[in-house]
Length: 419
Image (cartoon, rainbow, N blue to C red; front, top):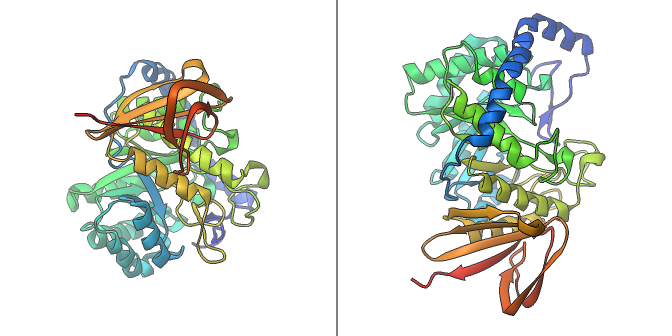
């Protein structure tokens, strides 16, 4: 990255742009695109909202649903062991275009996970957004080098934040168009994902999916954070996580530019008392226990929607927001056990049902061996059974009782198949 852009290695994102006059100048140059973003939202979002109410669910299994972001620069050797410990097979790896000189290192890292399903997150900088000749050269090298191990490429990220080097949707579309042209001409087997808007700012998504550029997305990606609203069930402008997913899915279904596939490629909650590693202020941070509980419920709700192909947690190892803190060795947070438990009891299953009767959220999924039923409640509810029931708590400890309190931390009931 070149000035005025710079990278914060603590929080794994660019620093905020402090030069307001520069930002204003760049946005004024893109005023036409900004006006189209507003117009697209006013026209498209009402139709998508209505469609989201009536579009049927899809049939999404958990085989590749539980994704995880890993990082070459965050304890790479320990990461390999942690991925194996969790039995992860769905990964996202970031690749910064401004580090093309490190492509051999990234290739070696990718090859370590050659048996996994990988999304390569191709992160842009201002130079590659403005110099499309440079972009074509470097994407050609990237696709040529990695496509034997990677099929899915997220082209660009966080396109609605100026600190990431993009000042309008049109700038992003020109950027994406280079990758799409390369796909058509030289790399027909790769799949291109976008537009990777962060947060619930779907006016940018609407413009990126409804335009006159000659492009197409193999899937729609979103960095759907809800951390500023607290729990994933909380609402923003009347939309909880499920309703936000409904709207995202509707945009993908209605768009002439995209297949009806959606990936949440980044989400998390920042962890309290981890500054400067947390990417937000302390006000938005949560305790490690809340982090673990919110994470599990986010995944459960997203799976219950049956409109998201996969969720990628950001990220496995990171002091301010990871399942593992690597500041002093390798310390597994409670979220590590929570993720492992969730994966153990829900991996390779088909969705069965979801409801919120009497204030209790209940999700059921099954395969030929067992049915897993997960329950949680925002306000404690007590269930009485005639005989003691076995269940597993959020972190995998088995318990047994005939009176069970359902609370904010999900618990798992396992019923073995008799057939």
